[in-house]
Length: 343
View 1 (cartoon, rainbow, N blue to C red):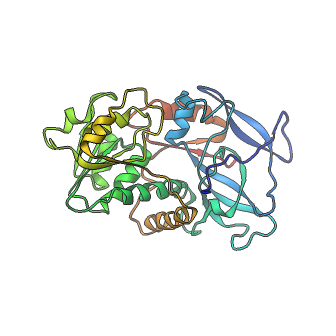
View 2: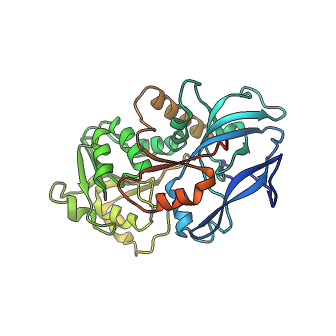
View 3: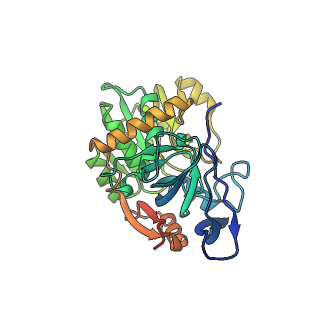
């Protein structure tokens, strides 16, 4: 069975002092608070990571907004999975990784905290010369690289990416290296579209509002739709738009639109167009590790920029303000980073 994202246990306490740490708890929809918890000890086969940077992902925002169904999330809960830090303690029977190694984490949720424990499977050791702030977003690259490969992108195909948030901008950088005939991206904000052009988009379109139909905006230039559509939006309703924008015999790779879809889906249209629809998380653990390696290499080789889209840095003590910033949905707010190192 493939490993899934997990929330490491953390014992909350009602006091400050030695042996305790600061952590963030999502108490209810729209409410996140700073609490105290015991600093965890690594079990056999685990390491403890002193967290430095955690980015606020779109999935965190969905939970903050209450857009996830109860079968997937319940409150209170802990968030944060785009993580970079340093191993500060190694449990029994762990080899290879060691105390002092800078690492990026994947498949660990609940990392808006000073310390978390995990297994080596969830770690990728980073070169010491790579700034840690640039390492946290390596977490998104396995799913993004896998999405691009599933798209079967080639120089004779037109590709559409809807949404240029953090993951959308990384997706644009990766997909451009697959050399599509045209790489078309859409977003609500000029600032993000400017970065997309820098990252390899051949065509950019500003959407008039979040419920606009993509083909109403791009259809004059691409009347037949797109061979590959990769939605990088949060809400599941974007899948209806993706189906409408996909060309005959095309494929949709669901990097985004994994939230609940409240709009009826015309599956006859999927059948009539002969569409293929793929999800993006690797289905085997070995693939997860391979894509983790490839993602780090792209960053180290200067081919994917994970730092340029950071617009705000907020300390862990002010995590509520950080979520309000990220939730405002403005062009000048792209990636909000939480500094979890408490001075």
